[in-house]
Image (cartoon, rainbow, N blue to C red; front, side, top):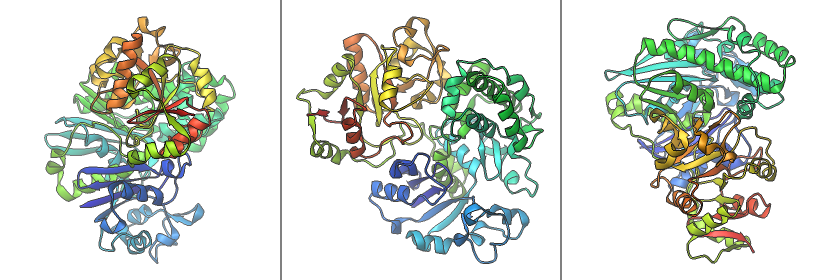
Length: 566
């Protein structure tokens, strides 16, 4: 069965599956070229997924809908006047379930009209998925262990901000934040409880944009002192069952943040919110792991885009595995929604049998057949070297900047070699001049990429983080003897955010690393996303060519050649 999942808030996205096999997953922003595009049906992302799979809307057998606010035009007659009419005439359908006016969201959302509008069959199955359960199941699908604690935390979804679930003895149990909490008439979690919102408030107080620039705050935190961390941490209490609560409503939290931010430097405020986040999440996990003492921890939700937090979790707890879902933000919701549908359809035992470790996240449309034609037609010239791998390594060793265009685009917020900019990590000044070329104002250093078998030569990366580090979802300490050898990758606190790469994941990318090490003795390169400031990571070959012409990169690397301007 062909199953479509979509998500239509910020970070809107679509995912297409053939039962348990993912055919494509695409964030709307990558197609429209509008950063964090959303708050509408992601029609362009759906079209991209279908084109990638060679399918049409008529092939769709089931559609997985988010349980969120819908435009009034998509709501059945009789439900417009109740359940919360928001800006842009949107209705919250969950309110009708809580009130008892509806027993199923299909009674509220006009799914027949929705299907007709978007072209899939009227008889396609309809499923409304739970926001935090989607986060959790997308993580569990790639953790084959028998006992797993799943923990999610974000700015909010379906009026829930945290969830915990336990897989044990073949049963998946909601500890909190599950369906009972979502549909409770008095929701037990409140917006003020959300550390994701706290971090967003600080992001805005420091002059950045929330839901976009939290990574800048994280980078800035290493330069400051947590002068307000004690004050902010005191706002939150962790109950014995591991739930986080705040005594203040969110508007008072926001007022306090704005007040505190005026009393210290940006660096100190950033350090304060980062310390608060770590303090409270670690306290919550400590109680959860006492309640459910398992060895495998799965994490998702936008809070876990915070790579330093994941490092702190590994330092605090003795675990065999910590895995952060690579699309931990709401870009992963569509995939999780499909997986939630499959769980309901097939039952837990069958669903668990389809789990497997995640090999890669190259899930965009494959433009490989067009790349060389587009580059050549646009005025780029193949370099004459017989071996593009050796040529790319030679260029990088000489100080050149190479943009990769290798196969299908990555899914999730990280560039992982398919759409990356790679360069030598030996020049400390590259952080300034390459960021200038890319119109960026980042406070984090570039991330290093290293072949998996070389990682422990450079980094103090514990075994429990090796899997998640394939997807650049954690920081770790750089060994002292390497900090001066790869300074472009090392933050002021001595940490780095590495990507570990295995050859089967991306042979060209891996082989360039090997060739570069053979020439220089340095096993790491910088890997930063192939985009300029405030634009999404590139998708089509035309976008890579434009970056070459604008001087963002010196060369392009495709599967078959290195390209330059003539």
